Length: 546
Image (cartoon, rainbow, N blue to C red):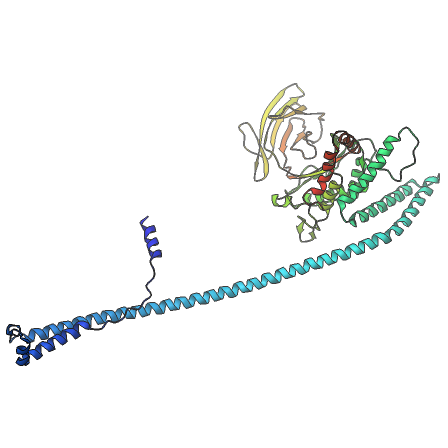
């Protein structure tokens, strides 16, 4: 507190920048003048009598004391003069030092001003360069739009010619009784590829992708309603099919991304694939309105993105690193694409679907920021939802029940924790390890795994007596949380439990089916037309909508 008050007093006290002057020796001058006057009176008796001064004031032995007083006054003035001269020199030195500090401070201020001026010039140059780049980008974009419009206009003629030729070739091969079925399939694949290419060109040259797809859905919705009304009557054929099965679109997107030939799809039947690179489960679901190629483009971008990040170093896994699932929930088609790999940073979530934004930053590849932008625009056109989740490896506790062939039952409690991003497990009283192992004499009949706090039990049966066998968590096969490895031997059978690292990213997309759009439209018209108009207008008022 005292130090604070002292600093405060020092700050409030004004600095003394004056130079102390050398004073005149008034005491010596006045003393000398008085002594000289006194001596003159002593030497002139006429003056004493004239002024009537008493004689007692002029004793005979006073001269020496007066001289001593005069010398004392002179010495005092000399001492005061020396002190004042020293103070004056100190004041001059202090003023010189302050002047030097002020000059140095001025030089520093000039240097800072010069530096800031240089920074300002650099900043102005940077801003001007960026403005020129953006202006150049806008000019290039407008130039690209004009070129794209011309390509689109001229491409119609070429596309019609190629499509007509391929359709004729496919019809000729199928009409020929001895025709090659493989050739017909190749021609049909080429025809589908041409249509897909044309739809990509048509979509990429649209001014607003979401609005373009929304308009197409409105047209398809009209044809679909007309078809529903004319089910029992003879109606003219529609110019195109307004609906398509999402299962076929998902399979087509998978065939374009996967380099190996995939098993054929039987429409209306569940489609499954688990080859160590892909885990695919496509259930037959209700039809979607619109163009199937738009769904193919959406999934193709998501699957390519998943492939890229699943190959990052340090994210290998014993299960398929990329998973695609298709199902129907509450009248909506649900598509999920999961990949092993690094999480998406929180600061990148809001920019993930922006045009030109990309998280791909490697030397040999730089993302163009188009794939997820197309995904978001297509979903907005469908009036659907797209969500992104970072999948984390959970900590859990499992109750494992082992039933052996000799009717012996073993029960173990297993804890799973995460250390340095890797899952570790331990049995009661054991140490933390990557796997938990058991050994027993009789063969294994069944295993039941129950997660603590969950009522569902995962039962595994059908173990054979020979060869190493691995079973993954059946509750979430797209990213299983654990793996059981059973190795039967003649004298001792071994079983191991391994918690798996499932760190990755999952895109969850929900699109309304054609029937849901029909039902919701009827309900909205019956209840409140204003609320339906408000719902349809939400996509154009959403952040980022154009």
